[in-house]
Image (cartoon, rainbow, N blue to C red; front, top):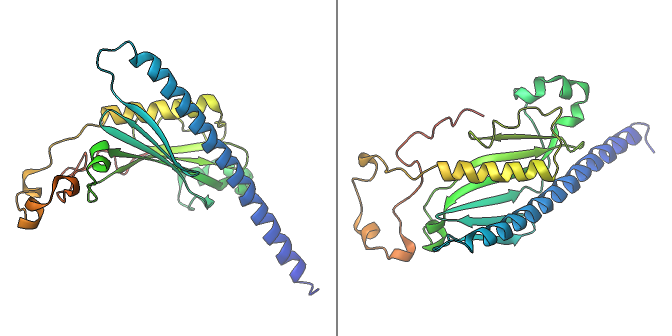
Length: 226
């Protein structure tokens, strides 16, 4: 064996093992997330049984890496990426003592949280817009960091001390639901839809081409903020 080959192979083994370990921990976290969503759906069933006109709260496991939760007129999609990522050098997390002590802590699995309108799926409106409202990063030590909008992101700023567990996952889910309930559909700016083609107006209701989203025609508040 070439004298340079062994260090190269060792580096390959170390990096691949690290990423495989983080992948496994992220997948286990995703499975726990589903279990907690399932528990929430059962809790809602009990609550809604006392209501005159219960609002839907439906959980669907689309695949091993995708979960859909519909409540009222909204859908939350939780999606785990199968790859492992590292934060960019300019990211604030990279400047923390926690990462400086061990750069391998910056490698993370990612779970995305998207918000869509339920009608976008019901009526197959393929041009409708969804929004990324949060993304959960999990590293080799099961520490987590979440970037997100308002309620979703501001609760968890401390990567060095935040450990992902059932309690923290439930808080993340509840925060995502709360944010979605507060994130209302606004009327788009008049000028953004004043011109409509004949094709668009004649399109059947199950394939509407007029684009719909909660903030179309408006700047999404704090898009550049965490």
